[in-house]
Length: 435
Ligand code: S3P
Image (tube, rainbow, N blue to C red; front, side):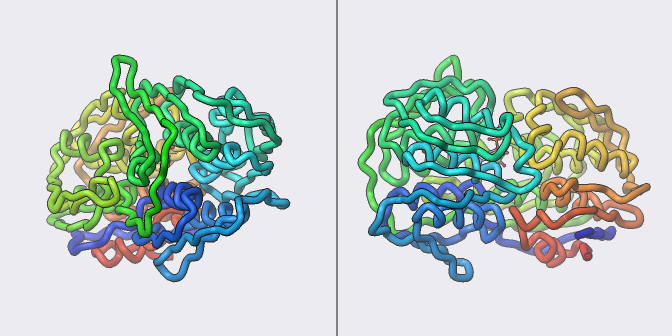
């Protein structure tokens, strides 16, 4: 599906932020393990969480979705082995977290995904799980992941070689579902929703800050039943709306119920440093996660050099930050971001290709980009390929509002994996996006 985004003068109004994708998937997994009746509100009704939901049901979880309410039902039977392969679609979080979770349950399983997921590296979770005692094979480091046997050892200790919340969470879930303890050293801090959710459900998880980074210790825990869980809005989805308001003229918008977990809002810090006019109001805590409402107004942005330590915190927002950088005064320098190459697409290349189509001057580094901002609207010389990557598609659609004659983005179907209401939401604010 190709989408066109036409220029618009301003956007305005208010929106409710769609549910957080990372948290929606985690509550399904941890909720299914708790084994009690849980009503989930604010769940992200999008393809990735739905893939995780059907994968869990395939191994015996009882999760129903009725319009926007998701219910986990208490099981009378233990989890079971699935005879057919477990399909996780486009979801890296789904496949990596469930590889750990299913390993801990001592079930055999084969996990597979779509074309994009089948190209992504899986040894980052498989190698430590093998060290933890599991027998797992892959196809040269890629899917199918075959969990064949073995048991999780007690008190495993692991130092994270890369900054990845998916890997960290996979190992924590393997320990949790096998009833074991684990200690993980995390030199570069990544999103901590798994830790926060375990704590919310009564689990004993300690976090210490040391000179070597975070030390996360999961102890033997007595979990309490929870009857409901409210998922806060996804900051990564809000990011598209924020940048659209910042780069358009005379705009003012209110985004309600945005998750503001400190390990997720690096983009806010970066944009504020770039002179963005963003205010947080109504800050509160929902199910152990900070959230609030954001008021965003058009701003004269200035380019900056990002610090290396912020990169894991903004990794999903770099494509949309690149669009903000196009309309900032001066250059924006992003380095140390080679993880972008192994996301739903090679986001470094996809972003650079898109910038080139928009005739935005930029340099491609081995691990990042230098973008030279311009104050004028962009002129697209060709169609932009999103490479089937939802965040690339949405980023360049946002750029379309500051184009001279509109932009066409190819291959946009996967917007449904994280933000299915994107076009309607943006058009309600005044954008012009259509098929
Ligand atoms: C996620 C972690 C990040 C992020 C992804 C969601 C999660 O991936 O890019 O969109 O839910 O844990 P990595 O762990 O590969 O950095």
